[in-house]
Amino acid sequence: MITEVEVFKRGSTTYYWSSRFFPKKTRQDVFKLYSFVRVADDFVDSSPQQIEQLNELEKTWKKIVKKQRVPKKTDELVHRVANNMYEVAMKYDFDLAWVDAFFQSMHMDIDKKSYKTMDDTLKYIYGSAEVIGLMMAKIIGVKPEAYEYAKLQGRAMQYINFIRDIGEDIELGRCYFPKSELAAYGLESLTTRIIMRHRADYREFIEAQLAYYQQWQLEANKGFKAIPRRQRIALRTAVDMYNWTALKLADDPFVVFDKKVKPSKFRVVARAVVRSISA
Image (cartoon, rainbow, N blue to C red; front, side, top):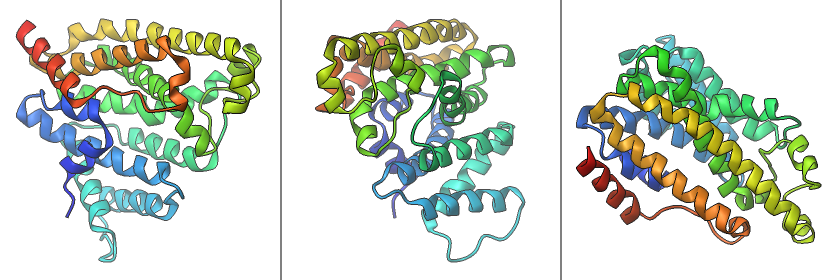
């Protein structure tokens, strides 16, 4: 039987290993949150997509919220991560509309393969990342006046994921970057056929997308002063790793078609140790 920790660990090197540096009680709840998110992500990122399983997860979540009986035939992992998510949501008084927004974005991964404007893309990002930032803010004890920074942190990290995963997403037949943004750089799409014909335009496009990340991340950084000191190490480490990824993507924007740029376990842990010593 796969555990929540294993689900989280196999899904994200940066988040998993940086989260190991949260205090124990916080770490346990972070693992519960991210195992729930990761299971849903896996359903929509698989090929073919596991639509029935995503629907089962959402239905199970809603039954637990309404305190209704969950059918015995429900997948054990689905039931467990949904139940754990409910426990965390109740413990930290999540706005349950955040979870609804998360599922809405997961369904957009199934139904919506392209986006016309940046507002369309940001609607997806709200449900897929910004609400996770809000949930994390609750878990680590951030004051409400800093919640906007938590949302921006989720947005910034998600945008790096978009850039890093261009090659994978194209294979899945989707593109998160708005058509208006592509058109501004003379790009019809981000397929390798188009990119190789417009290499200079593509490079400028990536530079512009990284500029969005930098803008949002600089603003999100202002929220660190609102985070309890003992909780900062893990989050600072994760941000460090995303900044490292951004630098790698800036150095070689075409690498996304060859491999997935992400830090190693050693790099994440080493950086966390340095952050711990500094703290």
